[in-house]
Image 1 (cartoon, rainbow, N blue to C red):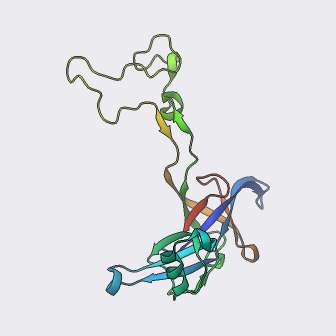
Image 2: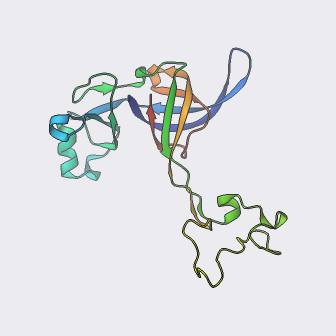
Image 3: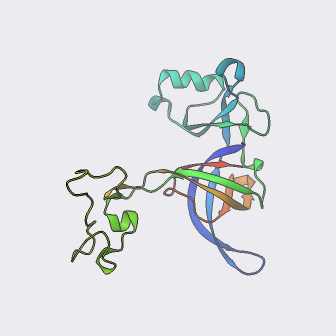
Length: 205
């Protein structure tokens, strides 16, 4: 499907024609350069590789510089492949936000905010001592009983416990495009998307 690489700018809200306040996210989408064209004969599948956000040459490897030089562009920080692109593109072509139109629905993928090591109440929504779940007696945010008795004498895989939370690849589907600001390469999308401000996101039609 067609798409672009973008950067999350932040959240705001706008009013629609009925005066309703709509929360939305602003994304700087593209422009992206076609850095490689995958073909079935050479690679076994068809896809477009797009690059976004210029990178300093001294921070790039010689192999990467040679790869981007073939496309006639500078090194890029973020590279993503898109399969089944709607339009045919050539190496070095520039794709901008104009491929999107107001009112259509898109999927946005990003890496969610990392929250570090968290307990079971925050991570899994355990009720704590108020609901007296998992065998706990008087400890508000403790996980309670996690194991079995003499058989099977182990904790089952998948048991919901404390651990690292966030930092996952998350895709939010069917978000409506409210505005396309072509001269500034901006997309205004209804709702929230994963990731912190200035993080990279992938927008797919």
